[in-house]
Image (cartoon, rainbow, N blue to C red; front, side, top):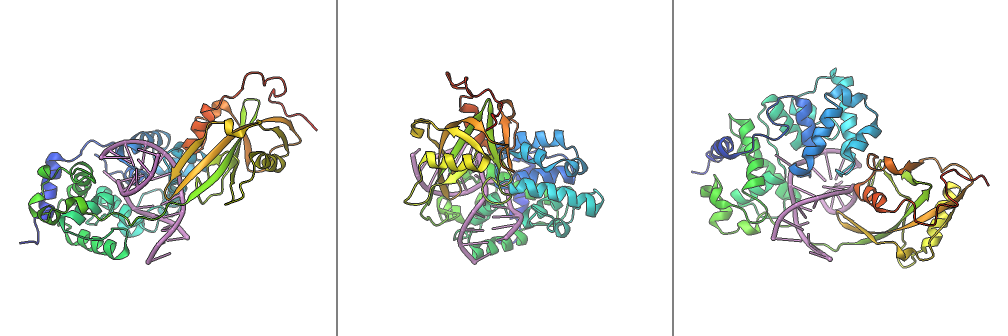
Length: 372
DNA sequence: AACTCGTGGAG
DNA sequence: TCTCCAAGAGT
């Protein structure tokens, strides 16, 4: 009694109750589908939509994206997070142009060799752009499968994920792959939700192991809790006239490839003073700057990401004299460039919130560096 | 094989 | 406020 039926119910439900009007639906253009799938990695639909539309307007096809400077891609991506996706997106576009003559591949095997496309994303593109019979496994599908088939354990665990991939492959229908694939995601997003699932509206409730065993609320098993380390750092907002000094961050790591304020970690146990950090940054860039008497006066600014809670202490400095240009990898960003620059969203907001020209400070900073 | 990478929403 | 995690991939 268990074999078959699951997929058929999902397909039928998707056609009646699923989502059909998302911006990347209703096309077989592999470029558009790829773009949406990459943006949707670990990112919710509502967040992606405006980014997707801006990208499509700026880069109507792969060639346009491949030909664009990386910095423009980073700029359009800024605020979306996981910035290695943006770098891989650009690399992938270049490879499609150079190795595939500008025609996006649609078979999962080839797709998976491209940067930023893993097993699940490759399958999704192959399904929606090529009608292939392939299994996806994202957060929605994991949750649906865990509950429907009573899979215990945390899905992040290797053995559990392996079991889920096997299930995903096994339940694949022979026909109606697009509706089935979309249906699994729609089910997870609108019915089989993480909290307060609507089992009364679920097309597979009759065969759901978790519902039968009253364990819907416990599946999938949550990630094992672990201590959250705290990393403290300072951010130095150096103003020269109406421009802020920003540094390009290394390509990998947090905020990789983006521009940010000079940042310094505060060593455990021996936090250097704000003034000492300011002096260090000033020396690096050949600047003479002043710091407020009390850096704590600046509003604290907290940013949290993945496992670390990063407490950022910003404080504002003022350039008194520049002995030369800023060090390589740094630029002065005019205030009206802040909104469109390739900055992490928290930094962008911080710069927008900081008063560019405090009252009574106009006399010695007119924007032109003073030779020493 | 665990760990890293962002941001925002929900509870 | 704090936890958990979302259309995962790369290392």
